[in-house]
Length: 497
Image 1: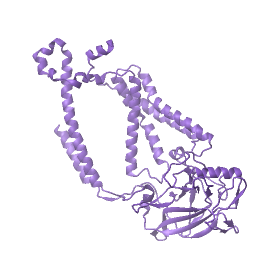
Image 2: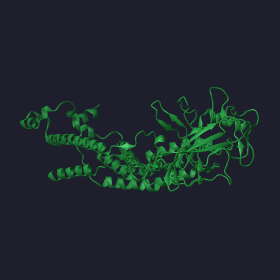
Image 3: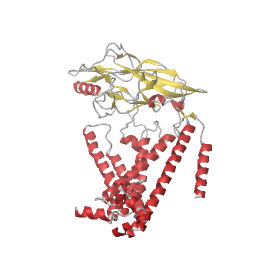
Image 4: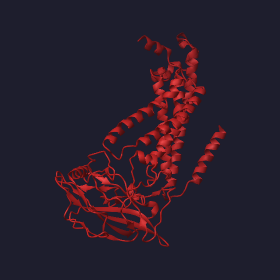
């Protein structure tokens, strides 16, 4: 006992002395910043178009995303055709990211007021109807410049400046015919690192609709007047010219905190000492209360176990009085019934095992997120971490399920071992696959490819099942404490009823 208290005291002292001082949070470890030189090209990549909230705060009218290079949009493609941007992570593919190259050319510190993207395109009636419908559904562009989302700037009532992560495809007011945004003013904030190196720390896009814009030659265009909006004719052909402008602004924002306007972080300073001290106080109080409760419960269990040798006629003896039998009332009279096996101990143990698996997966994911390893720059890292942690932690689910099932006296141990890693994930995967069929039918870019489905099944069978089987084997191998037996009187009453 003395050794345990000494170890606890030394552990608390170590936490206090090793606690870091307050400092600025750097939540992007493992992400290497990219530095650019003047006049070097900063890549702009495009992602799928997703539904976004309207200006009034209403939710989107659709839940289906569309691929950026859907033929009906008639967006300009880069020379040589569009290409995928690097291998996407498992989480990014599942969440629908489809990042492609684009024809936009952004040269550092080189402003462009009006630049053509490609030749003029013509929208037929089908394309015009399709795009107008997508504008009404509040679909928005999702661009990436150096990994940062290209959104719009807005200011709250408190005077705080934030950025959105996307911007709308067009504008619609009530039942009026929507207007299509065909000109984009791209405003890029950069931070000077010295020695001619610069880093991108912010991106804003101000789209506008211009019906009278046109190409002059292969290199220049007339961007027209934004007071004349572009409306697609659903009963005939409409000629559209895609143009853009680029504006560079110096910024004092550091690269490490460039995500703050997107994540709505007002103050990146974390008071580590306050967090550590609060955690220690809460842990001490919880430990103290738990120790008192466990001591009382152990004494009660020891006394209740001695009562099993008594008959009902012995309750009037001095021995029963010494054990305090007559002091029991209320819930203590049926305290042992918490150990009564339920009607379906197999299902309860399976759900408890999967719940423990989810609990540990959530806790470890939160720890990794707090440490900054799940950076928003690594798209899909959160989803990938959750999937991999859930499969690896199958041993915890199998162990908890086996222990609970053995405690309830279950005999179908083989069925428990098989169903623990199959039942709940199977239901979740089946539901996911069924809903994904609707996305496939709508040709949505958010539909998960069939090959990714096979990868999920392979991870499930090659990692999750063996891990769960190992945990179940360990759980059934170890002996379990039967605890307090259920009341025989109440059991007889329930049986007769």
